[in-house]
Image (cartoon, one colour):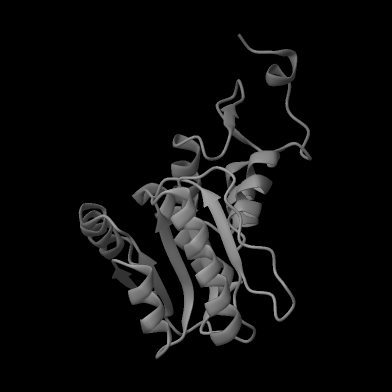
Length: 206
């Protein structure tokens, strides 16, 4: 049953149209549709059939996917993305999906964090995505290693960690230059990754 607020035309400060949400997030209308279909963005329809998207869910998505880009990064360069996934099956599926998205990105898939850090010793990347499914103690240790490496090397602009732990946080910084590590309690899926990388591309072009 619709509530009073659901039957009224919503305030513009509380809800957005699909095109407004797409413009605010820098995503395509098709990607916005995917996010709505997967309940990542909360939406409903007016009696006239027009979609309205909760501004709160848009802001939440924007905050959870806070892309960080290095200063003066040329937008005509294909950004380098490194993904660390410990599941060969998931890696195989995502490789096929990524090729179909036609995003202007250079994406490499690695099986271990150690392998990724060795690669980063030789070549700078724009984004490192790490899937963590190990026991909590191992995840905490890996985060500590990541923070120390990034603070010393500066060869990756931003690191995103997808963890199975709800409240996992990077170790507290103890002086020195701040590093960019974002931890999300989220499963890695093709739908989510497509939306995230589309937003990453849009942010570079903004």
